Structures are given as structure tokens and as C-alpha cells.
Image (tube, rainbow, N blue to C red):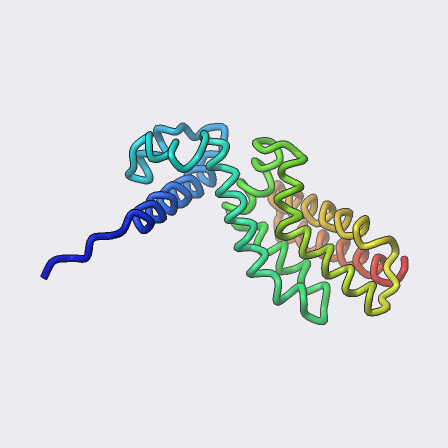
Length: 195
């Protein structure tokens, strides 16, 4: 019995997935600035032409990897964010920020590789946009927010990212994590009480 020959769309999807997977691993391990297109195509098991068929350059692949990562994180965190305890969402977000791929790709490299505006645009499609929407829902339900959701959500998001970076750089991550969670909890409580 002969194996079914894959269609062109299937081969295209497989090649793209291999490039995204290889990029994610290499960008996590080495940082975007230290990954060459040669390394990417070798790890993906494809040709240089295949890379340039799917992506303009290495940074375009990085952008796609970051977008894929952010979409996955938003999907993972949505149930917690939609839950009744906002503090649980903070803890869950800090948990994912401890993952090597999130720390390196999303927190460290994305703003530098993509520039602030593009990084922020992608964040608004995923994590930050989800937080803005949740704050708007809370305001619509009568929660006395300390500021408009469109202002408050990015400020809390930025504070949370800074907290994740503090934890990542700490000599004693467990202690700093506890301090960060406490501080973010205080900020969130003030934000949600009309502070």
C-alpha cells in the first residue's frame, strides 16, 4: 500500500510550521540577535528558498514566532483572566513569564527586534488587548476603576512585565516573586477600587 501523497497546501503548512518551531527554539536558546538564517534552515530541515518563500527575512520569522507565542498565551490565560479573582490572573501571568521562551522572546527580544510600536500592536491583538477588554467589562459592570480602562490596563500590564523582569534577574527569584506579587496585588486592588 502506498502512502498518500501530501497536497501542496499540506506541504506548505508543514514547511511553515517547521520554520516557526525551529525559530522558536533557536530564538529562545540564543536570542534573536545571535541566530542566523543558516541555523534556522538547518534546524527546520528546509532550504533557504523555503525560508524566503514564507518570510521576508529573519526578523519577519521572529515576528511570526512572537505572534504565535502571544496568541497561545492569550488562549491559555483567558480562562484565568475571566475568572472572579484578578489576583489569580497576575499569578498565572507571572508563571508564564518564567518560561524561557516567554522570557527571551516576548519580554526581552520582541521590543528590541520589532520596535515598541509593532510590539505594542501585537500585544494589543493578544494579551494587552484581552486585559483592556476585561477592564472595560468590569467598568461596564460598575467596577469603580481608578482610570479609564484604556489607560489603566496598559499601566498595569507594564508594571506586571517589569515585575516579571525583576524576577528573572533576581538572585533569589522566590523572594522577589513574593514581593512582586504582593506589590502588583496592591496596585490592582487600588486600580479596581477607584484608587
